[in-house]
Length: 342
Image (cartoon, rainbow, N blue to C red):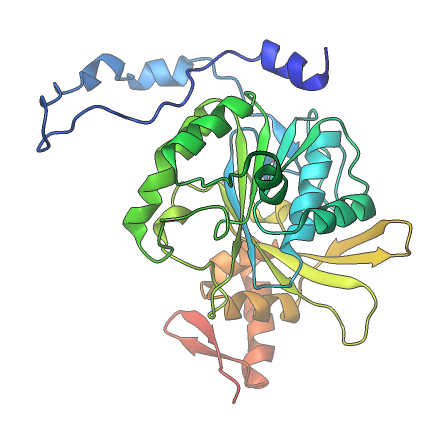
């Protein structure tokens, strides 16, 4: 029995996801009886004394079992590289950069909806993805095998994916734009087409990481409602020096429910390839450069900036004075905003 079978057998079985077929009030068919919500009320003392099973850490302090999170960046900045590296670390139960290894390894299912299969193979070889815990679902390979492509907004496809994923596993969707049809990015109501399905995966302890693009303003593209149920939102921006032969980028969290800012600090990553494989260097990224990057990303609150950078508010005040003197930042009420350069 392999690791996937062991984990699936050990976790409590939960109901499989089934798209709702019940008639709703105001539609044709019988009107549903109101649910008896009172039956499931928890008294304050009951909740306080109720034994809970902690959600296990999968990577660092920020990634936990059952999370829904986003990794986003502009095109070509390295988000697929990082998504594959995160998936590999979870599958092997090892650390990645400054992020410590999780409490155990997990089966990882990586859905690539965009790249050609030879390109996926090349990146997997360079990273060294060899764990039996790691499985690939490639739209290109799926089409060659079955003449279909996954559409995560299709209820039948959602049910098929749910059947494929064992409880407690990790599912990476790369990326949101190419993995769905019929869901308009800028329409908040369209997120409802996948919301219930994503919540059903959470109830089974399945961790979902969705890779997405940044918009022109640098924030995650599309409607904002999809961010509400997220445990974390991890942004990535390119930091490669001109002419450099290595890939460099900076990661930072604009949202992280699982830990304090000091445990999810911005990091600078360097990926070097000597022809035999990828070598990773990672260091803390702070100071005025990091502060300016966050302000340009739309984070203006001094307290929020201090938490994200893992420093005191006084340190943020000192750094912003330097940026204001340099004409890069200005005050707007109690917050800060970036000065647009011509």
